[in-house]
Image (tube, rainbow, N blue to C red; front, side, top):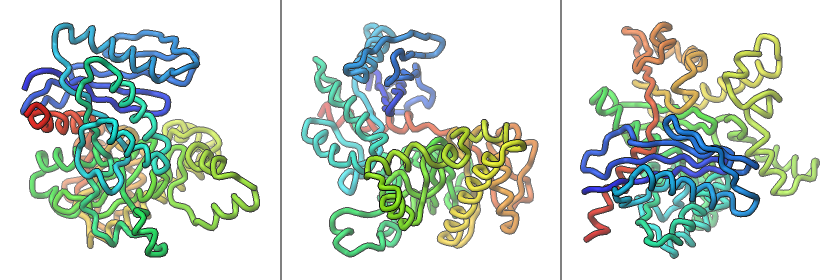
Length: 394
C-alpha cells in the first residue's frame, strides 16, 4: 500500500484530524495532527504541530468551512502524495454495524437514524461525510464505530429491563468508547502479555467517561449503555440516574424533552454539581475553599469506585486496572483517590510512579496491577481503513 490516510474525529465545536501512512504496519504516531477549535464561535482556530491560523467561518455552514480549511491544510502538507482514504470515528453503529464500513449515500442515510442515540457526536461525523461525498474526486470514506468493540457483550449485559418489545425494536445497552478500548486491548497485550488477558478493567476518564470489563481482551461488561449519558458521572453529563428523577423534572419543572436533554448532557455532572467547572483539575484547585467543588469531586470518585466494584463482581475478581484518556492519563490525584477504594483487594499505589504518570503505578507487592496507558483512537481508525483498502481496490 502507498498513500496517506486522514482520520477525522468530529465533535460539536471542534474537529480533530490526523494523517497516517497507509502501510501494512502503520506507525502509531501520526505524521501530522491538529484540530479546529471553536467551530460554533465567531472566530475559530486551526492548530497543527506548531502551526496556527485564525479562521473566520461565518454564520452559515461553519462546519463546512472548517472542514474545507482542514482539507486545504492537509493537501498543502501532502503536496504530490495521494490521500487514499478518510477514516471517521463514528460514535454509534447500532446493532447493524459491528465492523468498519465504506460510506456511501445509503450508509449515510442509515446512520442518520442513530442521531437520537448520540446527539452530541453523531450528527457532526455524518455532516463531515456528506461534505466529503461532494468532493471531486471523492476519497473512500471508512466509518469506524465506537459501539463495535462491545459486540462481544453477552445478552444479559445488553438487555434493558423493559417490555420485550423494546429489545425487539433495538433498545439495548450498546457501550461506547470502543476505539479507545480496542487500542487498550492491543497495547496491553504487547506490554503485559498473558497478564492482560485476565480480569481487567479499563477506566476511560475524559470529559466523557466509562469503564469496560475485559476478559481475554474482549468486552464483557461496560458502564455506558443505550446512550452516552449512562454510567459514570462526567464533565457535564449526569451518568446513570433514577428514571423517577427524570419524570419528576418533566412533570414538576415542566421541562420539555429538549430542555431535559440539554440539562442532562450539558448542565449536569461535575459542572452541574460544582457550579464551577467540568474539569477535575479546576475543582481540585478550589476544593479546600469551595464546598460544592468538594461535593462534586467526592461524588465523581464515589461513582467511579462503585461502578468498578460492580464490574469486579461481574468478573469475579480483578487482576489489572488501567487508566486512560485525559483525566485517566494525566491526573494522579484522581487515580490515587479511586485506588484508595480498592485497598481491600490488595491494590496498592506507588506514589512516586503515580506522580510521574508511569506506565505501571502499582507497587511491586500489589495484588492488582494498576497501569496508565495513553489512548490512540486515531491510530485504530487508520488501521481499520488500511485493512479495508485492498478490498476497495479489488
